[in-house]
Amino acid sequence: MSGAPGPRRRADMDYLRIIEDGAVLISEGKIVETGMSRRFGNLAAAKGAEEIAAYGKVVMPGFIDCSVSLLSGPPAYETASNRLPVRGWPPRRMELETRRRLRWFARGGTTYAGAGCGHGRDEATELKALKVLRGLDERLIGIEPVLHAFERGPEFESDREYAEWLAGTLIPAVRERRLARSIECAPWPGVEQAAAASGLRVRIRSSGRVRAGPVDVLLPDAEARPDEDGALALSTGFDACSSPFTNMQAALWNARVRLGFSPEECLTASTINAAHVLGIEKRTGSLEPGKDADIVMLQTGDYRDLSWYVGSSLVAMVFAKGLEVFPRLEAL
Image (tube, rainbow, N blue to C red; front, side):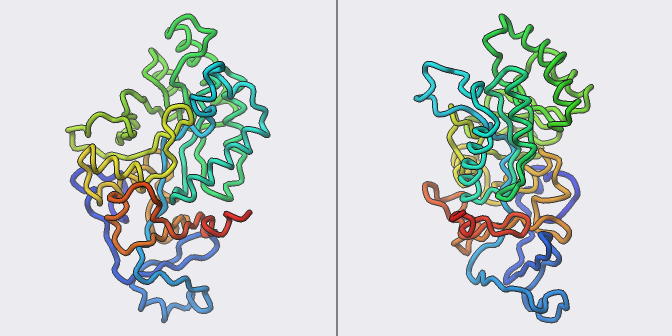
């Protein structure tokens, strides 16, 4: 996945730079070296290192799920009488629910998520949710907190009133407390300009598509692949109330079958391009020296299987910052 510093545009998304019979050397949570496995026998840094056999398996960057409403309410069938269940959650419940769901993502090979709430729709709940997300120790997977604002709260009589509150109250409060570096929201009038003026990266979601600067993120309900030759990313768009996907393998399958992605484009869109969406491309998203050791080992020797099979996970092992989070931490 190494290559040019910017996000991969459509013409370059098929290029994966695969190393046959390769190896990755990890130390203190970072990637030290990658290359042909026969080279590593002569590396001083590799002397005494623990060896994990990956013969006949794909080793790849961890998935980055860049648009996740992690602190969304229970499934819709449980919330018919209360459309804002998250408002009543204390911080401890938010933390426990977040950790429980992060395990689901880790099992599917996700090592980093752009996560928010968006279901409180009031200042107290949204700030509390971002504090919880910001305070996680990331022992399972990495979290980039994102302010979500997709639907207006019941206290507001119009979209304009809600947008003015977002721009004048919530966005300044988030920025002042440094709880998030970006906002993902519906196309509320004036909010994009207000967020940009506050120094937040702005992502606009509409009709299954998120405009994130030079990268467009396609969610499972995207109607079609954009015609333009731009950079694309994929996400599960997880929301417990409306989009219950936690496994990026399903998002890849959907992109291949419904949107016409190639298997190579699926991988690029769910790793390095997704890292660019969150602004973490210098830390993760590809297997390169100096980056975090966010790595997935598959139970197959063909990466194309990821976007072909759906309904069962092909993930054998997951490492986040060099720590084995699946299956080892499943027992914790």
